[in-house]
Length: 438
Image 1 (tube, rainbow, N blue to C red):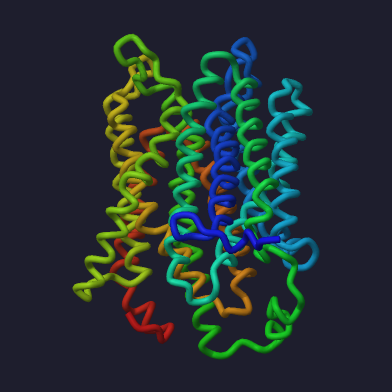
Image 2: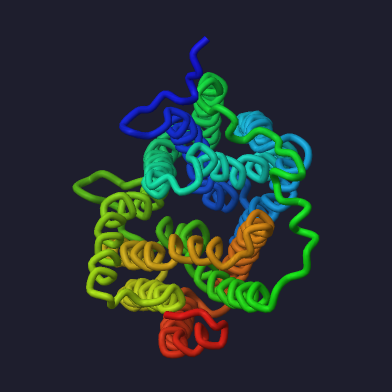
Protein backbone atom coordinates (compact mmCIF):
# COMPACT_ATOMS: atom_id res chain seq x y z
CA UNK A 1 0.00 0.00 0.00
CA UNK A 2 1.29 3.49 -0.91
CA UNK A 3 2.13 5.90 1.91
CA UNK A 4 -0.35 8.68 1.07
CA UNK A 5 1.10 10.91 3.78
CA UNK A 6 3.94 11.78 1.38
CA UNK A 7 1.61 13.00 -1.37
CA UNK A 8 1.76 16.74 -2.09
CA UNK A 9 -0.57 19.39 -3.48
CA UNK A 10 0.69 22.80 -4.60
CA UNK A 11 4.08 21.81 -3.23
CA UNK A 12 2.82 21.08 0.30
CA UNK A 13 1.82 17.85 2.06
CA UNK A 14 -1.81 16.98 1.35
CA UNK A 15 -2.22 16.67 5.11
CA UNK A 16 -1.89 20.47 5.29
CA UNK A 17 -5.08 20.89 3.30
CA UNK A 18 -6.88 18.32 5.44
CA UNK A 19 -6.03 20.43 8.49
CA UNK A 20 -6.75 23.63 6.52
CA UNK A 21 -10.34 22.60 5.79
CA UNK A 22 -10.84 21.11 9.24
CA UNK A 23 -9.79 24.38 10.87
CA UNK A 24 -11.76 26.41 8.31
CA UNK A 25 -15.02 24.70 9.27
CA UNK A 26 -14.20 24.69 12.97
CA UNK A 27 -13.62 28.44 12.82
CA UNK A 28 -16.80 28.80 10.74
CA UNK A 29 -18.77 27.20 13.54
CA UNK A 30 -16.93 29.07 16.32
CA UNK A 31 -17.08 32.56 14.82
CA UNK A 32 -20.56 31.99 13.43
CA UNK A 33 -21.86 31.33 16.92
CA UNK A 34 -19.79 34.15 18.41
CA UNK A 35 -21.19 36.63 15.88
CA UNK A 36 -24.74 36.18 17.16
CA UNK A 37 -24.17 34.95 20.74
CA UNK A 38 -24.41 38.22 22.67
CA UNK A 39 -27.15 39.48 20.34
CA UNK A 40 -29.19 36.35 21.12
CA UNK A 41 -28.69 36.68 24.87
CA UNK A 42 -29.87 40.31 25.03
CA UNK A 43 -32.67 40.03 22.43
CA UNK A 44 -36.17 40.10 23.89
CA UNK A 45 -38.08 36.87 24.43
CA UNK A 46 -40.61 38.11 21.87
CA UNK A 47 -37.79 38.28 19.32
CA UNK A 48 -36.67 34.75 20.14
CA UNK A 49 -33.82 35.73 22.47
CA UNK A 50 -33.20 35.13 26.15
CA UNK A 51 -34.16 38.65 27.21
CA UNK A 52 -31.12 39.15 29.44
CA UNK A 53 -29.49 42.49 30.31
CA UNK A 54 -26.39 43.75 28.53
CA UNK A 55 -24.37 43.21 31.71
CA UNK A 56 -25.41 39.56 32.00
CA UNK A 57 -24.94 38.89 28.30
CA UNK A 58 -21.47 40.43 28.23
CA UNK A 59 -20.50 38.65 31.46
CA UNK A 60 -21.45 35.24 30.08
CA UNK A 61 -19.67 36.03 26.80
CA UNK A 62 -16.57 36.95 28.81
CA UNK A 63 -16.58 33.81 30.94
CA UNK A 64 -17.27 31.68 27.87
CA UNK A 65 -14.24 33.09 26.04
CA UNK A 66 -12.11 32.86 29.18
CA UNK A 67 -12.89 29.16 29.61
CA UNK A 68 -12.49 28.41 25.90
CA UNK A 69 -8.90 29.61 26.01
CA UNK A 70 -8.09 28.30 29.48
CA UNK A 71 -9.12 24.81 28.37
CA UNK A 72 -6.25 24.89 25.89
CA UNK A 73 -3.91 24.22 28.82
CA UNK A 74 -5.46 20.89 29.93
CA UNK A 75 -6.24 20.22 26.26
CA UNK A 76 -2.54 20.33 25.47
CA UNK A 77 -1.74 18.18 28.50
CA UNK A 78 -4.25 15.51 27.42
CA UNK A 79 -2.71 15.49 23.95
CA UNK A 80 0.89 15.30 25.22
CA UNK A 81 0.34 12.67 27.91
CA UNK A 82 -2.73 10.61 27.02
CA UNK A 83 -4.25 10.80 23.54
CA UNK A 84 -1.82 12.53 21.22
CA UNK A 85 -2.77 15.54 19.12
CA UNK A 86 -4.55 13.55 16.43
CA UNK A 87 -7.06 11.81 18.71
CA UNK A 88 -7.49 14.97 20.78
CA UNK A 89 -8.51 16.93 17.69
CA UNK A 90 -10.94 14.18 16.70
CA UNK A 91 -12.54 14.06 20.15
CA UNK A 92 -12.66 17.86 20.28
CA UNK A 93 -14.45 17.91 16.94
CA UNK A 94 -17.09 15.47 18.16
CA UNK A 95 -17.73 17.58 21.27
CA UNK A 96 -18.02 20.69 19.10
CA UNK A 97 -20.55 19.03 16.79
CA UNK A 98 -22.65 18.07 19.80
CA UNK A 99 -22.34 21.52 21.37
CA UNK A 100 -23.25 23.50 18.28
CA UNK A 101 -26.28 21.36 17.48
CA UNK A 102 -27.42 21.61 21.10
CA UNK A 103 -27.29 25.42 20.70
CA UNK A 104 -30.06 25.04 18.13
CA UNK A 105 -32.36 23.70 20.89
CA UNK A 106 -34.24 26.55 22.67
CA UNK A 107 -34.32 25.66 26.43
CA UNK A 108 -31.90 27.55 28.69
CA UNK A 109 -30.42 24.32 30.08
CA UNK A 110 -29.49 23.38 26.51
CA UNK A 111 -27.81 26.77 26.07
CA UNK A 112 -25.54 26.26 29.09
CA UNK A 113 -24.89 22.63 28.21
CA UNK A 114 -23.94 23.60 24.67
CA UNK A 115 -21.48 26.22 25.90
CA UNK A 116 -19.87 23.60 28.14
CA UNK A 117 -19.44 21.14 25.27
CA UNK A 118 -18.01 23.83 22.99
CA UNK A 119 -15.55 24.94 25.67
CA UNK A 120 -14.28 21.39 26.07
CA UNK A 121 -14.19 20.82 22.30
CA UNK A 122 -12.22 23.96 21.47
CA UNK A 123 -9.82 23.23 24.34
CA UNK A 124 -8.96 19.88 22.77
CA UNK A 125 -8.93 20.97 19.14
CA UNK A 126 -7.52 24.49 18.96
CA UNK A 127 -3.99 24.12 20.42
CA UNK A 128 -3.37 20.68 18.96
CA UNK A 129 -4.35 21.15 15.32
CA UNK A 130 -1.77 23.95 15.00
CA UNK A 131 0.90 21.65 16.43
CA UNK A 132 0.04 19.03 13.82
CA UNK A 133 0.62 21.53 11.00
CA UNK A 134 4.21 21.95 12.14
CA UNK A 135 4.73 18.18 12.38
CA UNK A 136 3.86 17.73 8.71
CA UNK A 137 7.23 19.26 7.81
CA UNK A 138 10.71 18.04 8.78
CA UNK A 139 12.94 20.36 10.80
CA UNK A 140 14.43 23.08 8.64
CA UNK A 141 11.90 22.64 5.83
CA UNK A 142 11.64 26.06 4.12
CA UNK A 143 7.99 25.35 3.25
CA UNK A 144 6.87 25.42 6.87
CA UNK A 145 6.30 29.17 7.16
CA UNK A 146 4.30 29.17 3.94
CA UNK A 147 2.33 26.20 5.24
CA UNK A 148 1.33 28.10 8.37
CA UNK A 149 0.36 31.07 6.21
CA UNK A 150 -1.98 28.86 4.17
CA UNK A 151 -3.40 27.41 7.39
CA UNK A 152 -3.94 30.92 8.81
CA UNK A 153 -5.85 31.90 5.69
CA UNK A 154 -8.20 28.96 6.27
CA UNK A 155 -9.04 30.43 9.68
CA UNK A 156 -10.01 33.74 8.13
CA UNK A 157 -11.96 32.26 5.24
CA UNK A 158 -14.04 30.34 7.78
CA UNK A 159 -14.50 33.40 10.00
CA UNK A 160 -15.52 35.59 7.06
CA UNK A 161 -18.08 33.11 5.72
CA UNK A 162 -19.46 32.52 9.22
CA UNK A 163 -20.51 36.10 9.88
CA UNK A 164 -22.26 36.29 6.51
CA UNK A 165 -23.98 32.89 6.44
CA UNK A 166 -24.82 32.37 10.11
CA UNK A 167 -25.68 36.04 10.55
CA UNK A 168 -28.07 35.99 7.59
CA UNK A 169 -29.84 32.81 8.64
CA UNK A 170 -30.25 34.09 12.21
CA UNK A 171 -31.52 37.45 10.93
CA UNK A 172 -33.93 35.95 8.39
CA UNK A 173 -35.25 32.83 10.11
CA UNK A 174 -34.29 33.03 13.79
CA UNK A 175 -31.38 32.61 16.17
CA UNK A 176 -31.53 28.83 16.43
CA UNK A 177 -31.32 28.38 12.67
CA UNK A 178 -28.06 30.33 12.80
CA UNK A 179 -26.74 28.18 15.62
CA UNK A 180 -27.80 25.08 13.67
CA UNK A 181 -25.83 26.19 10.61
CA UNK A 182 -22.75 26.58 12.79
CA UNK A 183 -23.26 22.94 13.79
CA UNK A 184 -23.50 21.87 10.15
CA UNK A 185 -20.20 23.63 9.47
CA UNK A 186 -18.49 21.75 12.28
CA UNK A 187 -19.94 18.46 11.03
CA UNK A 188 -18.41 19.10 7.60
CA UNK A 189 -15.05 19.85 9.24
CA UNK A 190 -15.22 16.64 11.24
CA UNK A 191 -15.97 14.63 8.09
CA UNK A 192 -13.00 16.19 6.29
CA UNK A 193 -10.72 15.36 9.21
CA UNK A 194 -11.93 11.76 9.46
CA UNK A 195 -11.46 11.20 5.72
CA UNK A 196 -8.05 12.84 5.64
CA UNK A 197 -6.37 10.70 8.30
CA UNK A 198 -4.51 8.79 5.59
CA UNK A 199 -2.65 11.96 4.58
CA UNK A 200 -1.37 12.90 8.04
CA UNK A 201 1.39 10.31 8.40
CA UNK A 202 2.80 10.33 11.93
CA UNK A 203 1.70 13.92 12.66
CA UNK A 204 -0.23 14.16 15.90
CA UNK A 205 0.53 10.68 17.18
CA UNK A 206 1.31 10.21 20.89
CA UNK A 207 5.04 10.54 21.54
CA UNK A 208 7.33 8.73 23.93
CA UNK A 209 8.95 10.61 26.81
CA UNK A 210 12.22 10.81 24.89
CA UNK A 211 10.50 12.19 21.79
CA UNK A 212 8.53 14.79 23.74
CA UNK A 213 11.56 16.03 25.67
CA UNK A 214 10.07 15.11 29.06
CA UNK A 215 13.50 14.14 30.37
CA UNK A 216 14.99 17.48 29.32
CA UNK A 217 12.23 19.38 31.07
CA UNK A 218 13.58 18.29 34.44
CA UNK A 219 16.81 20.21 33.91
CA UNK A 220 17.05 23.61 35.68
CA UNK A 221 16.65 26.76 33.62
CA UNK A 222 19.82 28.55 32.54
CA UNK A 223 20.31 32.27 33.18
CA UNK A 224 19.61 33.03 29.51
CA UNK A 225 16.43 30.95 29.55
CA UNK A 226 15.22 32.81 32.64
CA UNK A 227 15.79 36.15 30.90
CA UNK A 228 13.91 34.97 27.85
CA UNK A 229 11.00 33.69 29.93
CA UNK A 230 10.91 37.05 31.70
CA UNK A 231 10.60 38.75 28.32
CA UNK A 232 7.82 36.32 27.35
CA UNK A 233 5.93 37.22 30.53
CA UNK A 234 6.35 40.91 29.71
CA UNK A 235 4.94 40.27 26.23
CA UNK A 236 1.94 38.59 27.88
CA UNK A 237 1.16 41.91 29.56
CA UNK A 238 1.05 43.56 26.13
CA UNK A 239 -1.09 40.74 24.77
CA UNK A 240 -3.65 41.12 27.58
CA UNK A 241 -4.04 44.86 27.00
CA UNK A 242 -4.27 44.48 23.23
CA UNK A 243 -6.84 41.67 23.18
CA UNK A 244 -8.91 43.20 25.99
CA UNK A 245 -9.48 46.15 23.65
CA UNK A 246 -9.69 44.13 20.45
CA UNK A 247 -12.26 41.66 21.81
CA UNK A 248 -14.81 44.44 22.18
CA UNK A 249 -15.72 43.33 18.64
CA UNK A 250 -17.88 40.44 19.77
CA UNK A 251 -19.37 42.31 22.73
CA UNK A 252 -19.73 46.08 23.06
CA UNK A 253 -19.05 46.84 19.38
CA UNK A 254 -21.54 44.16 18.35
CA UNK A 255 -24.23 45.70 20.58
CA UNK A 256 -23.37 49.20 19.34
CA UNK A 257 -23.68 48.01 15.75
CA UNK A 258 -27.08 46.49 16.42
CA UNK A 259 -28.57 49.52 18.20
CA UNK A 260 -26.78 52.66 17.12
CA UNK A 261 -25.34 52.06 13.63
CA UNK A 262 -27.25 52.97 10.47
CA UNK A 263 -27.41 49.64 8.66
CA UNK A 264 -30.03 50.48 6.04
CA UNK A 265 -28.54 50.69 2.53
CA UNK A 266 -30.92 51.35 -0.37
CA UNK A 267 -33.78 49.77 1.53
CA UNK A 268 -31.78 46.71 2.64
CA UNK A 269 -30.96 46.35 6.33
CA UNK A 270 -27.53 44.81 6.76
CA UNK A 271 -27.60 42.08 9.43
CA UNK A 272 -25.57 43.08 12.48
CA UNK A 273 -23.46 39.93 12.37
CA UNK A 274 -22.20 40.78 8.87
CA UNK A 275 -19.95 43.43 10.38
CA UNK A 276 -18.14 40.63 12.22
CA UNK A 277 -16.90 39.47 8.81
CA UNK A 278 -15.04 42.74 8.21
CA UNK A 279 -12.03 41.66 10.29
CA UNK A 280 -11.31 38.38 8.44
CA UNK A 281 -12.01 40.11 5.11
CA UNK A 282 -9.48 42.83 5.89
CA UNK A 283 -6.97 40.20 7.01
CA UNK A 284 -7.26 38.30 3.73
CA UNK A 285 -6.81 41.54 1.76
CA UNK A 286 -4.05 43.25 3.74
CA UNK A 287 -2.03 40.44 5.37
CA UNK A 288 0.20 40.01 2.27
CA UNK A 289 0.86 43.78 2.18
CA UNK A 290 1.84 43.90 5.86
CA UNK A 291 4.12 40.88 5.44
CA UNK A 292 5.71 42.46 2.36
CA UNK A 293 6.26 45.70 4.30
CA UNK A 294 8.25 43.88 7.00
CA UNK A 295 10.29 42.09 4.31
CA UNK A 296 11.01 45.43 2.63
CA UNK A 297 12.25 46.94 5.91
CA UNK A 298 14.34 43.85 6.64
CA UNK A 299 16.06 44.10 3.26
CA UNK A 300 17.01 47.67 4.11
CA UNK A 301 18.07 46.63 7.63
CA UNK A 302 15.36 48.81 9.19
CA UNK A 303 12.96 46.15 10.44
CA UNK A 304 11.87 47.00 14.01
CA UNK A 305 12.19 44.53 16.89
CA UNK A 306 9.27 42.35 17.95
CA UNK A 307 8.49 44.55 20.98
CA UNK A 308 8.55 47.62 18.74
CA UNK A 309 6.08 45.98 16.35
CA UNK A 310 3.81 45.02 19.21
CA UNK A 311 3.85 48.61 20.45
CA UNK A 312 3.03 49.84 16.94
CA UNK A 313 0.16 47.37 16.67
CA UNK A 314 -1.25 48.61 19.97
CA UNK A 315 -1.12 52.23 18.79
CA UNK A 316 -2.88 51.35 15.53
CA UNK A 317 -5.57 49.49 17.46
CA UNK A 318 -6.13 52.62 19.57
CA UNK A 319 -6.53 54.71 16.42
CA UNK A 320 -9.35 52.36 15.44
CA UNK A 321 -11.23 53.28 18.59
CA UNK A 322 -10.89 56.98 17.77
CA UNK A 323 -13.33 56.28 14.94
CA UNK A 324 -15.78 54.83 17.46
CA UNK A 325 -15.37 58.04 19.44
CA UNK A 326 -16.35 59.85 16.24
CA UNK A 327 -19.37 57.58 15.81
CA UNK A 328 -20.52 58.31 19.36
CA UNK A 329 -20.04 62.07 18.89
CA UNK A 330 -22.10 61.95 15.69
CA UNK A 331 -25.00 60.58 17.70
CA UNK A 332 -24.57 63.24 20.36
CA UNK A 333 -25.89 60.92 23.06
CA UNK A 334 -29.31 60.76 21.39
CA UNK A 335 -30.73 57.22 21.67
CA UNK A 336 -32.87 57.81 18.55
CA UNK A 337 -29.94 58.87 16.32
CA UNK A 338 -27.73 56.35 14.53
CA UNK A 339 -24.15 56.89 13.38
CA UNK A 340 -22.75 56.11 9.95
CA UNK A 341 -21.56 52.56 9.31
CA UNK A 342 -18.38 54.06 7.82
CA UNK A 343 -17.12 54.82 11.34
CA UNK A 344 -17.44 51.13 12.21
CA UNK A 345 -15.80 50.01 8.96
CA UNK A 346 -12.81 52.25 9.64
CA UNK A 347 -12.59 51.12 13.26
CA UNK A 348 -12.46 47.46 12.19
CA UNK A 349 -9.89 48.33 9.51
CA UNK A 350 -7.44 49.87 11.98
CA UNK A 351 -8.12 47.14 14.54
CA UNK A 352 -7.21 44.57 11.89
CA UNK A 353 -4.00 46.33 10.84
CA UNK A 354 -3.08 46.49 14.51
CA UNK A 355 -3.76 42.76 14.80
CA UNK A 356 -1.56 42.02 11.79
CA UNK A 357 1.24 44.06 13.34
CA UNK A 358 0.98 42.35 16.73
CA UNK A 359 -0.57 38.88 16.58
CA UNK A 360 1.75 36.94 14.21
CA UNK A 361 4.76 38.74 15.66
CA UNK A 362 3.83 37.94 19.25
CA UNK A 363 3.29 34.26 18.43
CA UNK A 364 6.61 34.04 16.61
CA UNK A 365 8.38 35.98 19.36
CA UNK A 366 6.98 33.78 22.14
CA UNK A 367 7.87 30.52 20.39
CA UNK A 368 11.37 31.82 19.64
CA UNK A 369 11.98 33.00 23.19
CA UNK A 370 10.55 29.92 24.90
CA UNK A 371 13.07 27.18 25.80
CA UNK A 372 12.53 24.32 23.34
CA UNK A 373 11.56 21.95 26.16
CA UNK A 374 8.86 24.37 27.30
CA UNK A 375 7.36 25.56 24.01
CA UNK A 376 4.09 23.63 24.40
CA UNK A 377 3.64 24.77 28.00
CA UNK A 378 4.28 28.40 27.14
CA UNK A 379 1.87 28.27 24.21
CA UNK A 380 -0.68 26.98 26.71
CA UNK A 381 0.07 30.02 28.86
CA UNK A 382 -0.43 32.23 25.79
CA UNK A 383 -3.92 30.86 25.16
CA UNK A 384 -4.74 31.24 28.86
CA UNK A 385 -3.60 34.86 28.79
CA UNK A 386 -5.74 35.45 25.70
CA UNK A 387 -8.72 34.07 27.63
CA UNK A 388 -8.05 36.43 30.54
CA UNK A 389 -7.99 39.30 28.02
CA UNK A 390 -11.36 38.24 26.58
CA UNK A 391 -12.85 38.11 30.08
CA UNK A 392 -11.42 41.54 30.83
CA UNK A 393 -12.93 42.80 27.56
CA UNK A 394 -16.41 41.88 28.77
CA UNK A 395 -15.81 43.75 32.03
CA UNK A 396 -14.74 46.84 30.11
CA UNK A 397 -17.79 46.53 27.86
CA UNK A 398 -20.19 46.59 30.81
CA UNK A 399 -18.80 50.01 31.80
CA UNK A 400 -20.85 51.45 28.95
CA UNK A 401 -23.98 50.97 31.10
CA UNK A 402 -22.51 53.43 33.62
CA UNK A 403 -20.19 55.70 31.64
CA UNK A 404 -21.73 55.51 28.18
CA UNK A 405 -20.17 54.29 24.94
CA UNK A 406 -18.38 57.58 24.23
CA UNK A 407 -16.43 57.47 27.50
CA UNK A 408 -15.51 53.79 27.12
CA UNK A 409 -14.30 54.21 23.54
CA UNK A 410 -12.32 57.31 24.54
CA UNK A 411 -10.64 55.52 27.45
CA UNK A 412 -9.73 52.50 25.30
CA UNK A 413 -8.30 54.71 22.55
CA UNK A 414 -6.26 56.86 24.95
CA UNK A 415 -4.90 53.96 27.02
CA UNK A 416 -3.83 51.80 24.06
CA UNK A 417 -2.23 54.66 22.13
CA UNK A 418 -0.25 55.85 25.17
CA UNK A 419 0.80 52.31 26.12
CA UNK A 420 1.79 51.46 22.56
CA UNK A 421 3.86 54.64 22.25
CA UNK A 422 5.65 53.89 25.53
CA UNK A 423 6.45 50.37 24.34
CA UNK A 424 7.98 51.72 21.16
CA UNK A 425 10.14 54.09 23.19
CA UNK A 426 11.41 51.52 25.69
CA UNK A 427 11.71 48.57 23.27
CA UNK A 428 15.51 48.91 22.82
CA UNK A 429 16.07 49.00 26.59
CA UNK A 430 13.83 45.97 27.17
CA UNK A 431 15.77 43.92 24.65
CA UNK A 432 19.08 45.07 26.13
CA UNK A 433 18.01 44.04 29.64
CA UNK A 434 17.15 40.60 28.30
CA UNK A 435 20.54 40.47 26.55
CA UNK A 436 18.80 40.02 23.21
CA UNK A 437 20.01 42.13 20.34
CA UNK A 438 17.75 44.26 18.18
